[in-house]
Image (tube, rainbow, N blue to C red; front, side):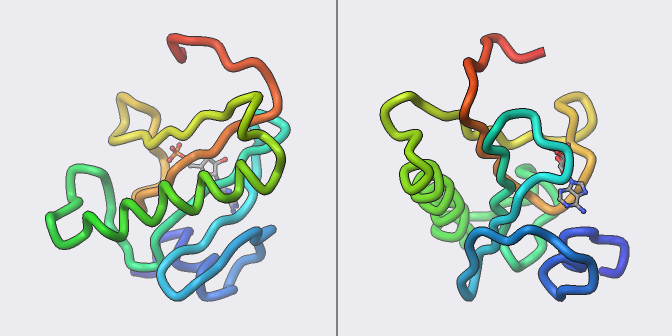
Length: 114
Ligand code: AMP
C-alpha cells in the first residue's frame, strides 16, 4: 500500500521521531504537534479507519490504548491528564487512512474539540 504514509514510516522509508516500537505497534511524534506532547500510536498492520476494525482486531486496538497510556505515564502526565483521540473519516478530520491514536498532553485541552 505505497500511498500509506504510515507504512512508509514503519518501513523507515521516511523519517520519524519514534518513541515506542514493538512487533505490532509503533508510536512517533506528530510532525505538526498540537500540544507539548503529541504522539501518534499506530498498528503496524494497516487498518484504514475505525469503521474497518473487526472483532479480530479488538486486542490490537486495545494495545494502542495501552501504549498511549504508557507513553503518557512515562512522560509524567498521569496526574495532570492527557487526551487520546481517533478521528474517523473526513468530517472528523482524518487525513491519514491508517488508524492512529493521537496522544495529546502538556497543556489545558478544551472541550468540546473544534
Ligand atoms: P489525522 O488528521 O487524524 O488523520 O492525523 C494525521 C496526523 O498525521 C496529523 O496530525 C499530521 O500532523 C500527522 N502527520 C502527517 N505526516 C506526518 C509525518 N510524516 N510524521 C509524523 N506525523 C505526520
